[in-house]
Amino acid sequence: MSESPSPAVPPSSAPLHLAVALDGAGRHPAAWREPGARPEALFTARYWAGAVAEAEAGLLDFVTFEDGLALQSSSPDGPDGRTDRVRGRLDAVLTAARVAPLTRHIGLVPGVTTTHTEPFHISKAVATLDHVSRGRAGVHVQVSGQPHEERHFGRRPAPLSTAELYEEAGDHVEVVRRLWDSWEDDAEIRDVATGRFVDRAKLHYIDFEGRHFKVRGPSITPRPPQGQPLVSAVAAPGDGEDAYRLVARSADVGYVRAGGTGEARAAVEAIRRLRVAAGTGTEALHLFGELTVFLDADGPAAAARKDRLDALAGHPRAEDFEVFTGTPAGLADLLEERRAAGLSGFRLHPGVIAHDLPAVTRGLVPELQRRGLFRTAYGADTLRGLLGLDRHPAGRYATPPSATPAA
Image (cartoon, rainbow, N blue to C red; front, side, top):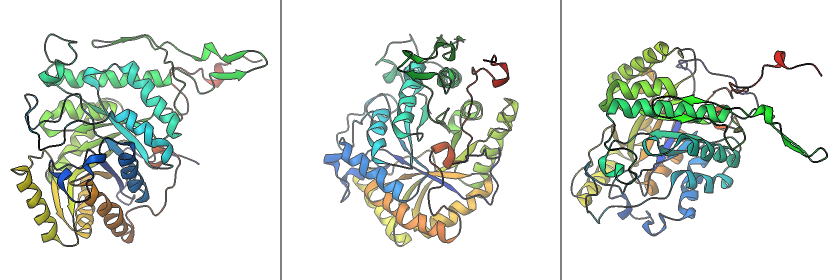
């Protein structure tokens, strides 16, 4: 199927893109106590396969699998000791790989904390996920400056500054992308008669040397089916231009955390300016708004459900992006309004997965379809294709056809 590149700024007439973030029983800390939440199943493959199947039934572009390198906590200083919250999670990349064969169309984007993981390991893990899913993999880049996470690894005597964290993450993505390109598409010969499995001339050293990493390469995993799996990152206002610069420099999708249309527009404009300054302004970049959602048949019911969850948790959850409580039609109104800020899609965080994920797939999606704002069928076989991104048909190290000696 043809996959043509989209413009740097998606046209306002383009259909919206939708993703959901999957994390435990839901975004709300008391979600596991809701009817139907199935807390006994949170660490089973069946639970995650069911959630992803629901998202695929709603024709969503992709799901993200939240991850971290320490137990969840309400405190930025370390474990909070609470026993009334979900604690513990499965590895995001391995979970995505487990559900990949059970799905056919939806993208699978696990979170990875670049601060404490080597790019060589991530490159082969995500390339493997792309092979397993036949071109539907991505990676969600995260950074962490938390001292209690540092103590799990001991790589550094002290945490990096915010600016250094994001600089390192940018280099991490660059190394990963180069490793994905280090095998040419036709490097594997697999000729039993001649005994040649691989053309060694089509495997390339990347010889990356920067402040944070020194990686020779090549990868040990053949080039992913997408060429370059999707890379996403959060544009968090609290981290200012450092986070925006990472999205502008390194990502295919950036998640914009804003409190309203005006804030979203300002963030979009800032990221686009940084992308132009980085020399990549003509390359496609999707910017998705982020919302936590509580959806019900009427607005008061959604608000009452959130209030009840807040009471169970002991206090309202402190969010660093907007929370929507209301009906699927009301959410559709908001998304339609926000796209005017330059957003091409949205990543929704279900407050309670058991309740709000089906409300997205069976309530919001049909409403958007009625308005002509969302697909009625999957139209591409890869995640990049779903988002209108080109495949990168030739790696940066591939020998141009004109330079190939004549036989």
